[in-house]
Amino acid sequence: MTLAFHIPTLTTERLTLRAPREADFPAMLAFNDSPRSAFVGGGAPRQQIWRGLLANIGHWALRGHGFYSVDTKAGDFIGRIGVIYHDGWDEPELGWHLFDGHEGHGYCVEAARAAKADYHARLSPAPLISYIDPANPKSEAVARRLGATLERETVFFDKPANVWRHPGPEAGA
Amino acid sequence: MSHPVVRQIADAVPVLQTERLRLRAPLLPDFEYWANYFASDRSIHEGGPKTRRAAWEHWACDVALWPLRGYGPFGVEGRATGDYLGEVGIYHGEGYPAPELGWFVIPEAEGKGVALEAAYAVLAWVKASFDWPHITNIIDPANTRSVALGLRLGGVIDPTLPGIDPGDVVIRHDLRGAA
Image (tube, rainbow over all chains, first blue to last red; front, side):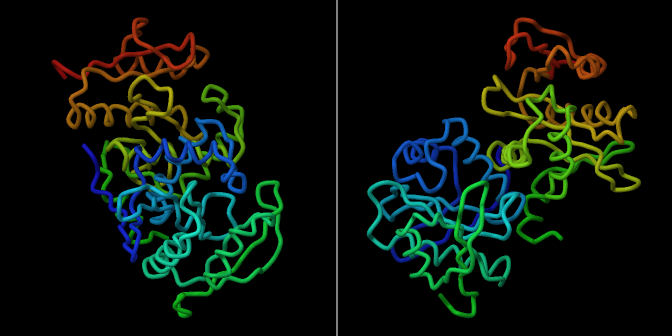
């Protein structure tokens, strides 16, 4: 028995943003164990990754939005992108991470645009933030390409972070 | 505030009514009670105390069971007042050998038979909804009140069934045969 619980599927030119599922776990674990995850809490224990997968699904149920799992048209699961607002966050955040081997194609910007538009259309027009590690220039470049600007410095769960502010839906980004 | 998308999960989870209680989908405001619980020594039998962040993660994972597996925790309200009283339902955390019947009552609602009344309703729902031979409570042996509740519900201690931590008391509720 499964519930009629609907997470939208978003399609872009090259990507599909879909509901997270249990089968996403191995790829999430591999990402966590790779150096690429250093800026998003990488190297966590396996159990933490499992909880991250489940907590995101709970987040969807409670908030009506969350991280989408992103697939290529070929069906490769390449990362997680969406709007998250867990307890302890100042505001809803547009977040992204791509797994190894999938950067450099503009996938992050393409998927983040779709997730952002979906959030504004279904939930709220309020402009979103992104928390970005000040030592993560690749993620800053994604934020800039999305039209975001640096708003302030903060401390996010005991670590320095920059808050980037995205344009609202009227900007059509 | 309840966004239409959130109402979807609320509508997808069944509502169970008892004489005094209404069991419904977990809702975001319920979390404050869990944050308080995990901040206190009352959570010592559930791996607490925990930080607010860890409490959020714990609770959000429990809520995730509904979309993932079709069972999960019910928020329990008083029918007359609509006040939140606690949570009773089916839990299945990592390391659990099987789905578990569990309960949580806020301090103000203790001693009134809330968990017992809600757990009866959940047992009846499980029996009607799943073809499971039995369901268990897995309880820290120091949590004598919960053990007593499991037995009052009609369960029997079954030392042959696995728990989560060594020494756990496992109480079995048979779901087949005569009601």
